Image (cartoon, rainbow, N blue to C red; front, top):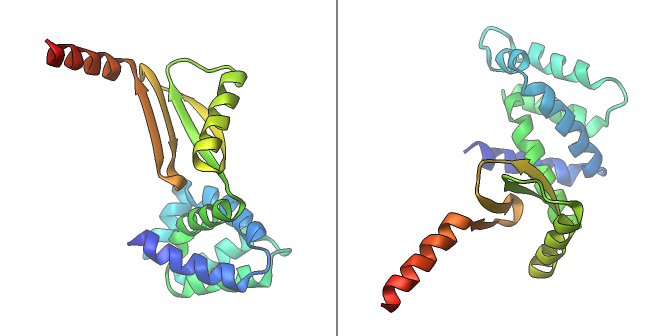
Length: 175
């Protein structure tokens, strides 16, 4: 439900703003601040008034902010939706990735790959998807590799255990 509402706000913001990338950048920074425990508690508190919450967000932005973004924050405050800013930023980032055809993905494995292998994997994904994908590595206890690009809906998993199980099943069926 939250994502559907965020999509509507993001669509309205992208249609009314001339610099969507700049607005998304500001919302990304604001999202990090909003995700802190103290600010999140303040934004969801029924004790603090919506005008106070709006002024708190606007004062954090400073004075050199686009007028469209200021009005957008005020509308979010009036409708008690300031806590949706991280979701709206996520939708805007996703839309910007679609426009530029550049995506970010995550590679999870128990060993760190060297940059040459990572580049080869990115090139292979580019051939497969037609999109430029930048992978970041995360350490996990997975015995194999897992590549996921959420915005494209891609998840590729190479597990040694799974290959072993499939090989055993194949041998059993052939006997």
